[in-house]
Image 1 (tube, rainbow, N blue to C red):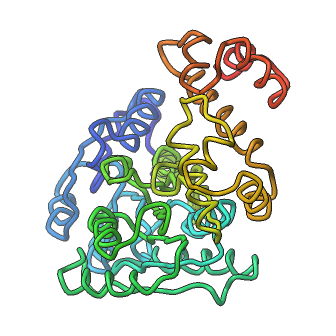
Image 2: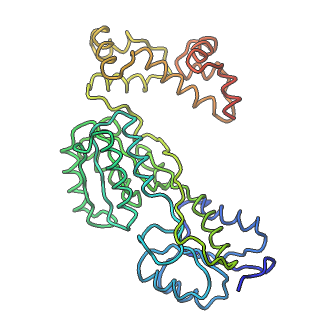
Image 3: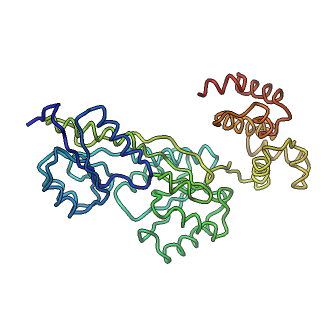
Length: 386
């Protein structure tokens, strides 16, 4: 029987994300409940058969559950009230489900590396749930569409989390990868930090030799890595909101509610592990790194060439061949990109300070170059960005 809209609805939330101090997932649920005005939550971070057996004894009107195994799915089906699963662990858990678009995760990761100029790729398959497979498949399909399918190497972890034997095999595998390679981790929890350490132990520099991106990125894990790890935002807020709306429909007696709802992922969050441009010419790659490291200094092309003891014309020619633009234009774009980051800073920086941190000799020079590149002044751009 449909519940009255004014009756307090007691909702169990089993297995909500716990990594974030202020969980985006839980915050979205709480916001939805506040708008409904008659939802009351019972939270449990533990997901087990015993938890669900206990849940059957509670007086609940609905439940949001992270279904992580066939046993948990079987127990969930025994509940006498509506439920929605918000996990991608099982391909078909047999209960109403809301999950992020795992195929989109692999596609976005591949596109990010392709835009960086990578032509060789590695994929690390975690030992885990069904979600690994659509991420892997869509990554391969995206790389294949760019005609680089033959340049993909795959490594499969045998344990979760990775044990010492796994890490030794991984180091041996990474050592054999040609540089530069774009590496895709199909999962980040909890292996990402140790896999980055293993890359360095194999003699690879991140991101110059190996650029790394992960799907299903937990911000806390990714930002704690060294360097910080680029990830695809899984859109927990969107999943939580759709799961709550789906459960609301089920509790209201909608018999024809969809069995599975796929929520688009968020965008790629670029961090240090992919902060590079993949080029085969290592002298050009070194010049790019030098420019980025000294972006706050008013260096010029002559300074870059002198640092690497190469003729200026030779460096300019090789740079244009590799990057399809001049070294001067590249340096200008890097400075403007840095200026955009600084113009978003809070509290706001003065234009003179922004100019200084970007290697421009004055705010006037920053204004002139910024307007040439962006078609607007720094001040106008900052106002629009807000």
